[in-house]
Image (cartoon, rainbow, N blue to C red; front, side, top):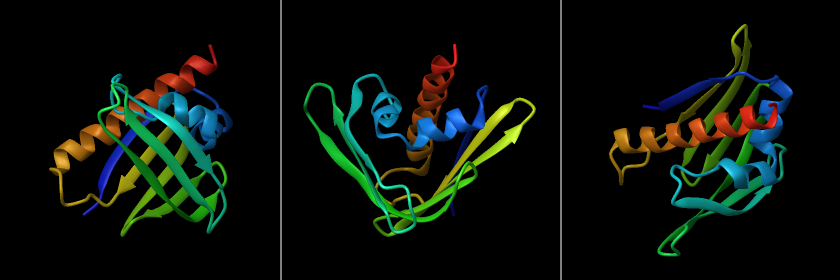
Length: 136
C-alpha cells in the first residue's frame, strides 16, 4: 500500500519542477520541521542517476542521508525513484488552480504510516511555501 501526499501550488510548472530538482532549492525546503535542515544535496536527474540529501537536526543530535536512484523521468510530469527497497513516484499536473504535486511512496515498517504521511506532507507543504516565495 502506498502513502500519497499532495499539494497544489500557485506557480508555473517550470518553477515548480526546477525547485523540486535543484540541489540549491532542495536545501531550502527539504525538512519536515523548523528544527531540521538539509545541509547538502546532489541531483543527477536522469534514469539511472542518483540523488542524495543530508538531513540533520539543527542541534546536531541526529542526521541521515536520504538517497536513491531515478528510474523514470518525464520532464515537467513525472519523477520515479527507488530508495533502498522502496519506491516513490512524484507527479506534476497543471490545473486551473496551479500545479498539483502528488507524491506516492511505499512506507517503511519502522514508524507508523500516519507519522510517515505527516512527515512527507510537512515537507511538501514547506516545498509549496518555498516555490510560492520565489514568484512573489
